[in-house]
Length: 92
Length: 199
Image (tube, rainbow over the protein chains, first blue to last red):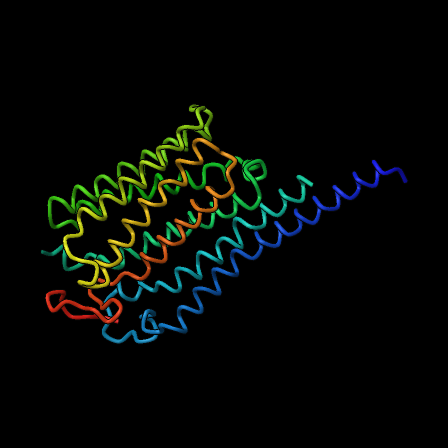
């Protein structure tokens, strides 16, 4: 094998590894956000009104900040990440 | 009086905006990871973050109308609404192909600079008056310092450091907004004039 071809193959392999790690990062963004929301709920359970709902008004029952964070992570994983991964693989 | 009785509390509105800003932060990060070419492969994705930014600007108008109780407060919220709409609108124009210059990114820098200044100007209390005051100061300085990132992006659109800083700023702003309470202590400090403290 000539040095040029070996160099080209090595370059392509490096590119493939970089692309694969990009896919992993894109797939990890959503779960990492969900994890942050769950951790927040465990550390500050009083921020979840649903755990102590008696006597609370509608707005307080809707205001569940740690769940908002979880929701953002879930939406990212389901709506944004799959298309991005497909496009990254197609670009390869 | 009736409206004040049924409208959500200011801290809840901060959390809703924090959610929108967190979405923006994740989108910026994702675009940074995959690169602008892959990001632009699907047309709807190109409109996603400029559209979200523009929507947040629009939603700031009802906040200005319903939640401000002083002139300076109203001017601050009105200016945020305008600069967010300007920034989102300019980016929408760029992705649509109506605007071509890379320097439109300067509108994001201006938006952050104006927003940061507005935060600092309309917060009349010191850093340790209560958590809300602390967060206003922290948010103001964060945005002013971070306005350098879109400024660098306008000059060097491929700068990874500037794009990372820009994305990280939105995540930090979201975290700060999620920390907000209408009246709560900050690092053990709470003014006797700040009302009844919450956790």
